[in-house]
Length: 249
Figure 1 (cartoon, rainbow, N blue to C red):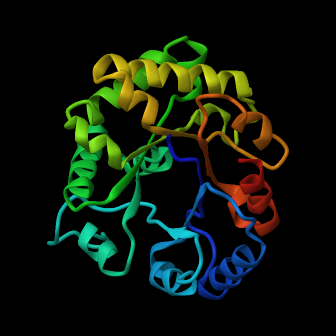
Figure 2: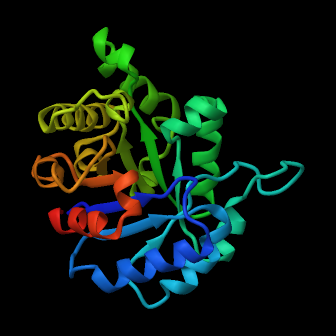
Figure 3: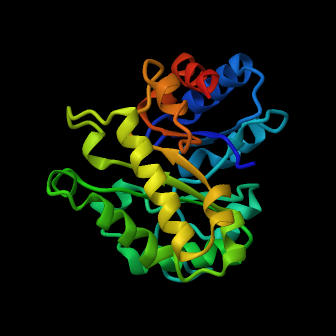
């Protein structure tokens, strides 16, 4: 049975004191759940977060990593550096990395291969922009993003892959993605993976929804059969909102 996951991507938010306070509040309020709960603080607070959550079921994950093991890559972090402080899951391909830092399929493929080669789990993000959705190109675009980065992997690698579908057009644009649209795309993703590999991999891979999940819509979104949880942005920065979303799973 595939894992249910609620992951909070904190992006470039929360200083050290704020991070420790939010983690303490989350730990105190977190309900009993069989789902995996993850948080991704900013890089400078990862080690502290790992220590703070040492006795908690909340897992600390990274927002990004470089594909090289070491070298002249100013400002970058390697897989070994993450593993050394107790981080073994990393987000790769987030829409903001693609949009603001020009991360293309070639770069993302290198990152995925590097992380998997170090035994890490990869939360791979992908999704279409508004113009792709309006032009009816959204299925083709998503298929291309998956194919170009993940479809050259060995089947065994999929046990360390988590997928996170981000309809970029529904994040902070005023446009709204319905639970039915989320289910439609998640079902398409499973079908595409099944055709490229097999139905077992497609059935077992966890697919998260990353389109502005909030306490008010989480129950309906998570009730869809192919939606296995969420990659949460803004709501992950407010303990009560994140806990409400965890309860929804």
